Image (cartoon, rainbow, N blue to C red; front, side):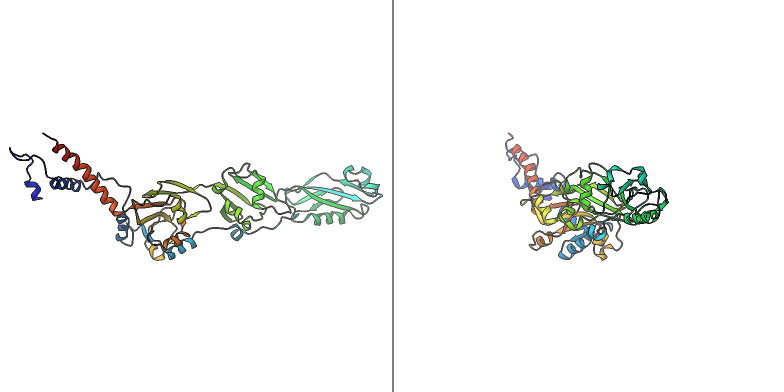
Length: 408
């Protein structure tokens, strides 16, 4: 800048020692330019800086980060690959356990004989089951535990195979084998304790326990209530059911809202209650800059914008709203997956760009899901950066000019 070089910094007698305003402004601009405006405050990358990633080959930087404008097609693909599981579809509604006997079960067996009692009558019977009028006398045998071979032992007839059979079938077998020894025997078999019709409940519940099932057919919420319920707020709990080789999980709040998901449990199911507080982080020219929790049932982009109090009118770039996410590859256009480098856990780094200046985007935003650990970033409008630049010049040059003006 030749004109500036010729301006004297030391002025001879009779000359005005005060710099002219244009020269001072130009000096300030040169100072800022030569320092690359490093002293100018910034809240994060500009829209241009983020979009510049699209020029780094295959819409990525080092082939890693994808820039994806949010459209109706993109939103539908993300929603389709949400991977939401429903108990009614993946696990299925169980059937009541009925009265099937298993190994380890404890049985109570009572035998009645018509008078005169020939086999069990001499023992006097059990007073709890002596019928009125003494027309029949019953005897309760000692409780029988089904052994590892699936058998129990009955006096006078020996071993009886019971595992895998119903209570009625076992009672009929015992009765038939007593005919000829007892006088018109009648047999009742009931389960005292079951070792095979239990559900295991663990996790963030009041009391982890094995809960026995009955022929009534207990459902998921009933079993959770039996152990005292969950210890954390319902909207932050996820319930996982393991049945054989299948595993499914759902937000507890979703089970409560949809009765179909309150499925009937089956023996050996494992119910795990997990405390999973979901959250996303809002940064930049948003109404709020903080980590915001949300329900296990999930929220949409429009809800997220509401929770951050929208955008700052005096700062935000309406075409510079971004969601930084580690996305499942299946939720991305197949063309973008070519030669993409995934994270160690198999996720693809993507940046979704939202143009909130387009009125139609608010219909898309009502279905576009926000996921756990998303970063919602709102960049500054270009004029905001210019305003910051002018403010830096003004705050740098004005004190110098004032000092020179008041100098003797």
